[in-house]
Image 1 (cartoon, rainbow, N blue to C red):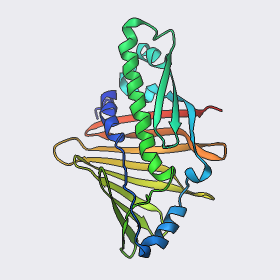
Image 2 (cartoon, rainbow, N blue to C red):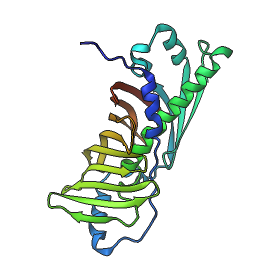
Image 3 (tube, rainbow, N blue to C red):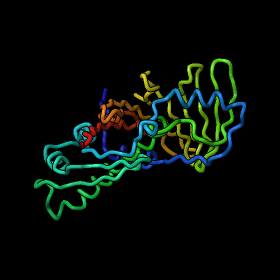
Image 4 (cartoon, rainbow, N blue to C red):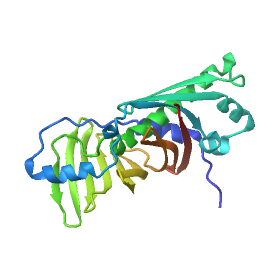
Length: 259
């Protein structure tokens, strides 16, 4: 069987999809649903409750994984010569900076370095944009949420500026599916959580992008490893793999938090 060649272009195409933000408009919640939502909100690991104000870290992309079969000794020398740092603010907005080592500090390589920087910025920001939904505060925003009890699970729905969001939650208050039906793409996240003394902590998730019209379907699997920093659990290593249409994509990032 012929092995599919993984190219970085597919990963770059999906970066814009990962960067989709979700913003709910605050509204008063109906009293009948208040008790269930209070229990659900308290069931999850919540960085804001721990006083999260942001953090700074070195970012280490695994270029052999990201470039896949296109990696060569010459290209890896250039990519590895670019050293990345990031700051993540209290809302998980990400800013990436970089320093260039001797192997990439050449005028003719400047466009390549700038492109690498932009791609890392989008990849990291895209991850934190999804991660924040389940870890930063609460997956259930302070807005008008409709709740249906469907025997084995609950269906919750609310409106955002980007389209309606629907959440499936089981009787243990764990989210099994999160869907944003946007005007151009349906984005589905199926998360998995680890039970901790401080609540359910996101450790894995699948993310599906289904275009509303013509387009390419994308499926991604994320796995997150954590580091304990100042009494808070922050991402240490993120691995993703999946398919953009028929083309495989993969990436691995390590975040080394700075003291």
